[in-house]
Length: 219
Image 1 (spheres, one colour):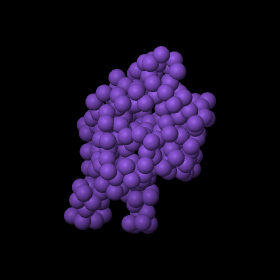
Image 2 (cartoon, rainbow, N blue to C red):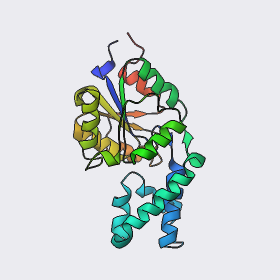
Image 3 (cartoon, one colour):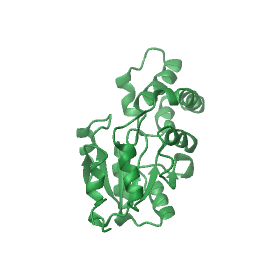
Image 4 (cartoon, rainbow, N blue to C red):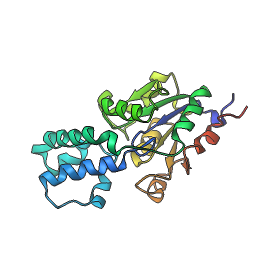
């Protein structure tokens, strides 16, 4: 098989890209913020908080209570995970096709590893990924190149033969900083136009679009 663009490695963000955790994340933020700032934040207010680490979001608000706020968020998030997480159409089939086609695939996320495993298991995607780089595996999260470069190292891949796929600017800029190709997903809750500002190399209308980009199934 000769992939288009010479790409042999696909790295995926998790939340909002492979699995629909939007409702879970929004409700986790609203639950936490309502405890500390009753009736101050709405659903629209918390959308900008999706993507950065919890520390990056909570520390500017309340440096003294940041650890407590993170713990509150994670407790709610864990308790409601399986109830609120949903699948994106076509993701399972696309990832399976990539795996069966011999592509190297990995997860690069700002989520903690234990919750990553929970989401992958729920969506039955855990069988496909050999490499997961989570927040607790690195000192600097995306958009720093560290997590992407770590995933590539573990996969035995080079940036020039890889593509980073995600739903937020951290994914696009992280890929650019690491030297990979980049792809945004049009189903991002942030909106297609927001992602296009960061000039990804590709924009996926559906997850299956990645197959054409890398030449999966073509001889």
